[in-house]
Length: 615
Image 1 (tube, rainbow, N blue to C red):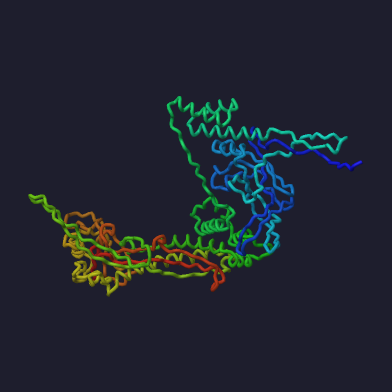
Image 2: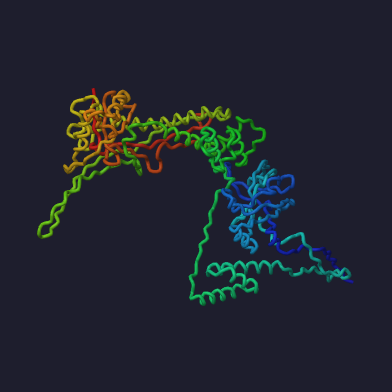
């Protein structure tokens, strides 16, 4: 008798779709522990997540948010919540519930239709186990915490999906025990495929109605009679034909790709803002940076090292700072961001009188900036009897200057960071900001006082202030009605390149600190008892005090820089004001901060400035 083969059978777990339409829940696989390629400062490696029950801390996942592609900048990014979560040793499984908000409904419909199926989990790693397989570095997370679950277009773990089966249901198999050879396992065709197909068709019906501009009653009628997609299209065309070919709308879907909240560089910028808020309590923290509001530099170094996959257990605060400085670029980003914010505050607050009298512009590069000046347009002439229009000419002149680079570097020591000495930290940054503003003002003053106070040489080979330019008092004198009147008259009667009046309107009186009190008296408003006592310059000129002026007697009257060319200063395009760069120090045991200022200035025209040497 031939041998017989006994086939052992047991109940199979074949179930319908896991979507519960009434409860708006669905089961998902949020991790299978699949290997994922990553990269850190040491190069590429394979990351694995241990799914041992002792390795995964689910305390933060149960009750956590279900997000739209990891975005967490606003309430609208929350699609639902995690109702339950477990790990089985082979995979992580959760039941998630979707919100009933109207903006979430299209996503819920795509999930029920099987269109959106990909899942991604956001997590942090507290402990790693490193190994090597076939020459490739492998890092296994042996203690980690999932924080949220996201619906995404494409997951890192290909097995992380919306579950289309519920393994809690059972089917019975038909197999007569008295005939093991003929015993076969049969699976009853169940309704999940039909449910999924119906949901897909209903979604398409809604899309057809939306494009055709048809109302909900049209959609409900087709769904109630179990219409297919082809029937829905024909019905939509018939409905449009009845309406006379109504307007068909087309819609374009816009997808926003958000930043990953686990990116160490993004974390570093948030930490930099939080550190700055400790220095400047008036700064209102952005929501992402609020989590680091009370973190010290040591706390930040530890978190950044952990995010980069470095072991921090047992490290002292000084060792953590040292490792953060020399093994990642994140810590210099934090300090550079903080120094940059503090420096800019101090730079903008530093007073500079002469800067008010110039016009700001930008330069594309470091080549000379040539400013072409056109003379006045020729006067219009009356047409003769033949209607002939005569051609006019315009004279021109040019001046030039260029942007140059000014720089300094400072060091923030490791001791300052370990001690959390923000006082020394902020004081250094403020001083650099003030130094940058002082550099700009000094460049402008040196330019003005060149050639023994006569200013730079212009394109006509004459100094800025020259008797031939009619912008210099023949004899120095103190501020008075007479001298101010002479200065005002000189500006108002200036002539352009073509000899026509340009009528520069005097607006500012600039003096050194030694003349400030005298100038205030001559510009003060006086309630005069008689006409002879009226101050003609009250309210007509604005006082500017420039403490960097070398002369204690020389004073200037200038026109509004927006009205006529005069002093002009420029920054390199895209770099207005001081720029900050940072890196781990080699010469300094800490971080080196480099402050760069691309700045240049020149006088474009002499007609808007008048100088009096005083006495």
